[in-house]
Length: 416
Image (spheres, rainbow, N blue to C red):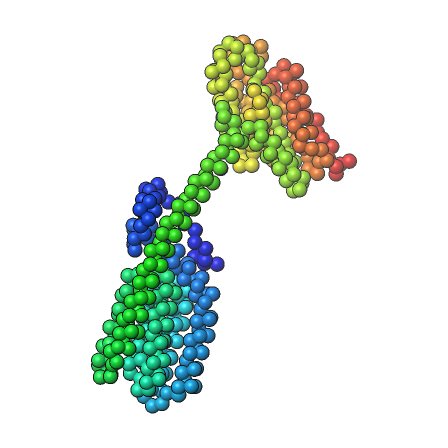
C-alpha cells in the first residue's frame, strides 16, 4: 500500500497551528498556503487523485472507448476526417492512459502537480482541433461536445491547483486557435466562443470555488487531527501519571499489580521462571522521627533510584509498594539470578553510607530483602508469589535485618 492511500496530517508546530487558526477565524482559504503547509495539502490532493483514478479510471476508459466506437461506426469519418479521427483517438487515448497511470504508479504520482494537467490539456487540444478541422459538420459538433467534456474532467477530476488549471487550459485553447489559424480553418465564431471560452470559464469558476472549499476543509481536518493528537498526548500523560508514584517517580502499586499479572500469564504461557524481590528500608520510622519527613522523602527517592538503576533488562520493573516498601519484578529470572540482583542491591545501598544514627542494625541506612521465585509451569498464582516474597522479607527482618532471605523453592507441576 502506498503511503498516499491514507492521508494523515503529521505533527505540526504551534506556529503552524496558529497560522491555521488565523485562516479559519477569517474564514479564508488562500489558493496557496505557507511553504510549510502547502506540501502537506499537495500530498493530500495526490492521495485523493490516486484514489479517484483507481476507482473511476476503468469507467473513464470504458466511456472513452464507447465514444470512440460510436463516432467511428455511426458517423463514419472518411478521407481527411478519418485521419483526424485516428489522430485524436490515438493521441487522446495515450494521454488518458498516462494521466491515469499518474494515479497508480508511485514514480508518476510524484509528478501529480502538473502531469495530469498536461495530459488533460493534450486531450482538450486534440478534440478542439477536431472541432475546427473536421470537414463534416456532424463530426465538428460531436467534437465540440467532447471538448467541453474534456474540460470538465481535466479541470474538476484531477485535484490540481487552480494556477495549474489556468495554465493548462489557456495553453490548450491558444494551441487550438493557432493550429486552426495555421490550417486556414473556417471558424464559426459563435460556436467557438461557447465551447472554447464560455464553457471553460464556467468550469474554471466552479473549480476555483471548489478548491477554496476544499482548502478550508483541509484546514479544519488539520485542526481536528491536531486536537486529537493533543488529546491522545494528554491521555497518555494521565495514564502514565496514574501508574507512577508521585514521590519516587517509579511505578506505583497499581502498575505493579497490572504488570505482575500480565508477566505471570506470560511466564506460564512461555514456561519460564518469574522472580520477585520484596524490599524494606530498615528502621525507617526511626529515621523519619529523627531526621524529619522531608529527609525521609529524599531517602525514599534515593532508594527508588538505586533500585531502578540496578535493573539491567527492559522487562524488569521496580515499584513502590507502599510506605518504605518496594517490589522488584524480574521476568525470566531463576532463584540464582534473583539472588544476585538482591546482593547487588544490598551492596549499592551500603555504598551510599546514608547516615542513620538511630538504626539498631548499622550506623548507616540499610535494607532487607525477601526473594521468591516461581518456577516454570507453576500451579500457584501471582498473589502466592507476592506472599512468599513478603514472608521471606519478614524472615530477613526477624533474623536481624540488613540481609536477604530466599523463600523455599516452590515445587513445580512437572516435578510433582
